[in-house]
Image (cartoon, rainbow, N blue to C red):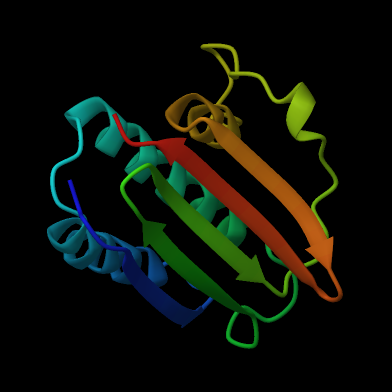
Length: 138
């Protein structure tokens, strides 16, 4: 377990290739974070990638002009991720998110994110969407 705080950040274009940069950032961050229970790590990483995928898939406008930031943070008690993107405000209520039926082709990302961490938040700050993910280290 880390005795100090571990932080990493990324500023990237809203394009599918940015998902690879997130995987790379997570790999660097985990080295600094130290030991985390495998299921906690898997759930957190899944949530981060699913939210990133939603940002990439559902942002509007010219994708080259859209940007997002990702801030990762860990201390002795928690793991957290904060995304900020300049896409259109999502028209969804996180309280109503459910896993898609087996015959549906999409609609699992937010449900997987919810299942992977203790808390998923979404708010609008000015012209930015702010997604927060937090889970306890166990």
